[in-house]
Amino acid sequence: MQTTVQNKVVHVAVGIIVRQQQILLALRSSKQHQGGKWEFPGGKVEAGETVPQALNRELQEEVAISVSQSSPLMQLEYAYPEKTVLLDIWLVTEFSGEPHGREGQPLRWASVAELTEIPFPDANQPIVARIQQLFAPE
Image 1 (cartoon, rainbow, N blue to C red):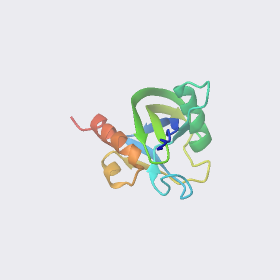
Image 2: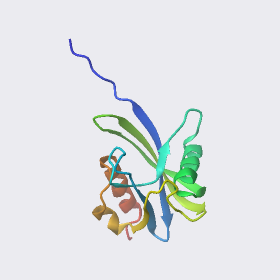
Image 3: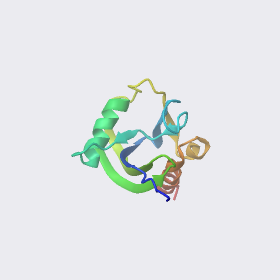
């Protein structure tokens, strides 16, 4: 008899934080899933939270900024062997505070052109493509 294991779906609020045509990235700890790769900051949406509430909370906790202007960019689901992530990606165009890694993680600002050269978790590849589409020169 074969049993199938249902992957747990983790709902994640992701911020594409933009400042002067640059995107803020955080380096995942080597102890984390897909560790050692760069990611767009964010985190799990908790029960009872809206995505904008989760995004603001996570960005305050992780990179010390408060979101003042954001809009939904895209949503995607990605199945890793050990879990499935539902990424709710928001474009953050205004924020207060100076970003820094509150959990000790390195941060960097990258140009849109640089994004293709940077190692991201597999689930982030469609996000990189969408950002490049969004910021493509006319």
